[in-house]
Image (cartoon, rainbow, N blue to C red; front, side):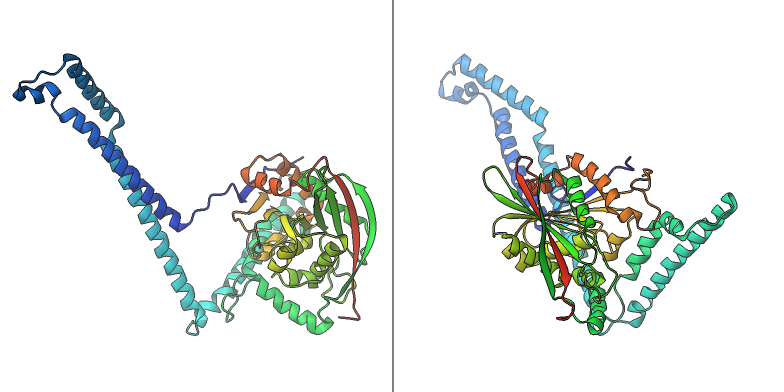
Length: 470
């Protein structure tokens, strides 16, 4: 059973315009106004000029009655056309619209200049501690106070009504908006460091982890089980392809590489990347840990990303063969980080990216790959990028409020129930049924992998951190 319907943002179906486009449109409207005015003047001449008989009379000439009648009818037709079209008023409307576009362009440019000036004034050494240091902790405390007050008020009400105190997980689930707001505020620009983002915060944590456990980037991959499969049919199939990796030993991380061979012999590839498997900061042999998360969020080199490159090379992926990177949680971050790396996209032809519950708004696509990100309003993990996922011409974000989901098979009791794969598979069903232009653009980019008539072969790579080398 599904909850509320999905909402889509960004992508090929989104509306994006450059300021220069406004000026170009204004010029085209001016040209159209000139053509309308010229046509109006031509028809006006036909009406105002005397008929041929009147012009020729002084010279003793006589006009053919038929020609004179034709001239009269033409004048009447022009007069009727002018009345119907309203050329003069149309020209005025075109002129007004042109001026409005130019005014809008000027307004946007002025606002942009003011924003840049404000940012520059805050970024130089003359900024005030009051401007930078005080507001940030005050905002965090304010969000924390709001969350605590809402939770306490809710708990008291339930205690009075039901006679028992609800679990903390249940309370926090009920106030997911406040939780996401607190996380976003806490990860917003910090004092004295210009405008540090989530990326800079995670790099700080990475530095601490590196001092304690070493870089943790040395990994070894081992080619594991290979199976013959059918190509994924859509987004839901991709979700379960990722979920299939959960059956393997958690002492290692896993990467699924699927070779899809079409009937004409052309080859495309699917890379399936699972979520976080360990909470260590690099001390564990499993590289699918928090150390990889902290490195991948800002797009930095990370252990699972390096293992993915090694797996693609081992599988024999050639330049020019389309690659679809699909991942849940950490897997989505790693896949997006690779797709944002110019060196990776120069070596591998990334056609599409799919992320599920992954904070990737801080990453920018390298190349023309289509990104599709699924997130739930009750899932706090995407909020770790200090904002919703990106929405650009080739970045589509699908958002779904899953509060109405009641199926116990996909609605869990833990705080992160909205982050788990089963609920994302349920959302993926709606995405597969969507005919939105942005989804269609992603679907077209992923088409070589989603070919129902192709043959598929999946190899699962086991990935282990080389702790001695770290």
